[in-house]
Length: 401
Image (cartoon, rainbow, N blue to C red; front, side):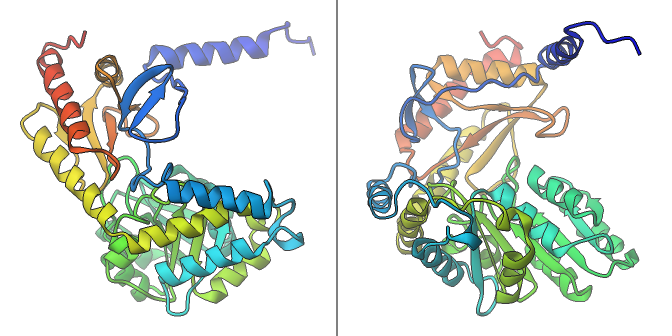
């Protein structure tokens, strides 16, 4: 075999990258120069950011920062080992107890913490499903749920977004030994809430697990307990995953479920067994976050006031909003280049609102994902609305200069 000429591998990558840029799919990392907060310095520019998932303003909250400092002084910088070989501390155990008691998706629930939501979902799906099983997943689920389903080697069935009828038909046909219905609680790019009561009824009828990725519902819905609580559900067949770097303001994730489910993860889930535990200082800080989520409902009230203010102000403008009552407010633009141009127009007016394009969202639905926080003021929201209004005539002319 004749050796390939030098540089062939890199040339192929460069060609693929060039095609991505030409299609308006190029991604750029902007550099945050301040703590995560609405008023930030990004790429050296002072802007009002509507880009993050710090829904309750806890990422830079003085109480959480003080708890992190205290945790580092007590526990050091890192755990030093996986949970099963010496890295599981009293800080981790206390956080897991607090999360289980607060989220309570099942009677007598327990909880397990992970370094990220991605690891939590991979652990959950690969531990509970295998070759003889089937996973039924909403078409708009987060990518990590899809990866977990694929790695489980179970049959992977995706139903149209929110289509309970299609899901019911698929469940009727399955010969699978074990069945998992898997859904986001709040969908990360549309901001809508899954029909959990209907999904739970199907889980009951077909003796299935209901797995809810509540990354964007925990801390916000159901008095902070999440979308499962908001739907009025609690059952041994419900498995709730939540992330701790969004509304909780720090980092990591958890699974809350019946104690037998949690013990199954401890004993068999490879992403848990073979990963160094998250720094206990983070767990120490998160205990304060969970207490603030539980005890300070005013943060949620402020967030929902901002959501209502934004939606009311956008009603007269030419862009379509998704029917979302959550902190995620997508402004549908359509074409990739148009979404980028609108985001750039806002950027030049002092606002950071990222453009979201395929494959994160379906082709033809490129959007600006406006993410609201309790930390945004009325003036912040009004100024963003004024900037959108300024750009609306240019949008009609397809000229956002």
